[in-house]
Image 1 (cartoon, helix red, strand yellow):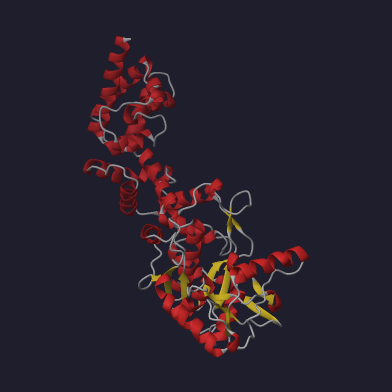
Image 2: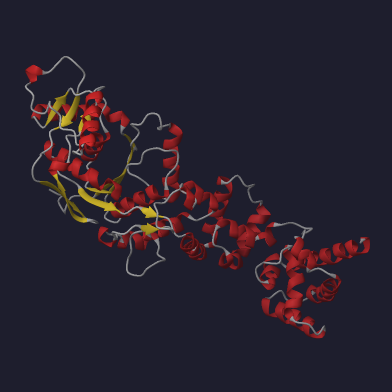
Length: 479
């Protein structure tokens, strides 16, 4: 039985702490967040930290940090699965009392021997415990595991919102262990108990858990609990169609953060990985929350494409208000350990945003395009820019500079002065633009020279032109 349609939606993200938030996990979290938030439901976080060797405070914090950067806020405190072990054992005992589970005294060595013999004889290696229907009076005084007494006939049906109706023959499902012989609960039991106790109505997770859904359904049914709505989403593949791995590049969310992709661009891109709303590619958080539904998730694996992510990132940067973008840039600089902007740099970059934003796909691109306003006099040209400041070019700048001193500092006037200078020298505008870029920015690839002049202002522009003429004149004399 599925959750009632009128039930308040409760979703959860339940990662194992592995040291970082995997990009696939981030997408799963996003889908759960969008589904819950778009329906005024609750989005919960559970850390599945029963593997004590891998579960460290640092690994858990990495998950918190990744989700926080992505803007995926969760309701209440994060739940520790390990801390709930006593509750898991309590449910296993209840299943024993109901006759829905049994004590199995088979040793690991006996089970291994059975499977080895079955393989040798070409039989099924599915272990059938001889203790399933044993009289309790025959139980030895020895350690035992608690196994679920799974049905052996018929089938278990998983009604999945993404995969459709999936049927599992009960004859192929084993009596899974709920409590190990040392008294520790298994993952399969813990997940069901936690989801039930947390009131989870929709389990949205990777389709590598689809087989688990059948086995977990049996626990729900044995306890008489309502089965949640299942939605198993295809995994993310690399461009080559193989499961996403380190060979495809960055795997952790913090790596994308460090590369300078805005969080909203990551949300947009991850939402489109396996889900669609018509042909919409670029959309806001508000649109995603209004549009997202399980019916829009496809059954085929999505392919991660850096070019599409970078393109979307540029669109989001262009659409972000200047003051917001500047604050995000400074946050990114702090995260990556870069020196903070000075007051002068911050003010200059704020003025320059209109002409650097269209050139940027990431935060580093913003700094690169805004280099002209971030650098200080004397501007040191790179190798390519230095070549643009030969004796002929310096002569052009020397002739242009006096005409700028008393000009009204407006684009049309500046364009006219540069055009007139080019005409008087019998040269093209490009012949003047190259040394202007070199003098103003020390680079050959920059925003428009007129944008740079407007942002820098009259005094700074003229001072940089005079610096370039004087410095390179001295260098020529020395050579």
